[in-house]
Image (cartoon, rainbow, N blue to C red; front, side, top):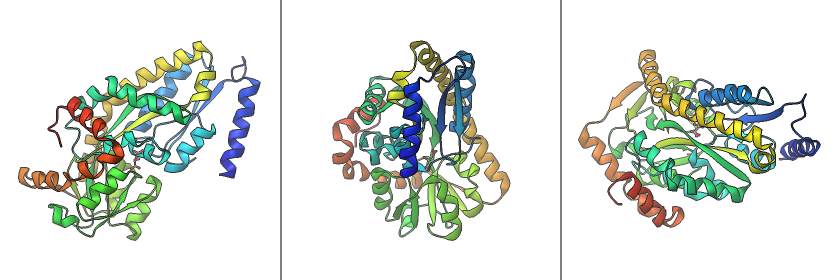
Length: 333
Ligand code: LMR
């Protein structure tokens, strides 16, 4: 924390001097926890390329991937303090800073596909959710995809009964906690950067994530089985420190917004392929057996997770859940 406060103080001092003199570019530190070779990593690189180009080098974007600067929880604190300017945490990670509404994205099977997701994020509901960030000193700029989550463990996960007593790493979301409790598992909140080692040493038995995250963190090397469940979604909210963003000249901000819009289209246009490629690479490695569920097994998983909607209604908000379900056209829960 002390380190963060000092860093924030030096950023604040820089801002007072004025960030955009002719010689010194505005620095945007962009911290994230995944590998560069992932949907988020690649979208961040694209934003860097375009923001630097459109501002003629008046903006310099420094990307810090793979938790090199901060782990999950510290990231958002660092942004609020101004020690970094831009992040793209997953929806699940906004609960602990008091914006539990984003946990609606964590509800099991709430999104049948990416087209439906886009309907929500590009519509009025998506815009309203972004507005909630203002009160926390952040501005929400965009929604970035990763993709759908799969389950993995060192045992075969086929029917709900297989999940009983299994310790799963989760992101810091109460919805995800409720999801694993509904399956009789033991959820354990853990930073993303610690998952590989926790799986390797047996601190947890399993985890849920997208193929691209599983592959780039080498989780498949320490998990004997992975099941194609597509039971949930991981996506990101690109956020900037509000004071920093509002303090940019209108010209620089407009060019950065243009860069963000294009980087978003680029990233979201290739996220599904990234995950498909990662699945292929995992299969090819021969280290993890990939399990596919029959329609009946899939239905059993859906039924087992159904109670989660009621369990978290008071936290996430039933009206929000209902509105979300209306948008997605899913049956009401
Ligand atoms: C996780 O913690 O599993 C993910 O949110 C990591 C990420 O940023 O994709």
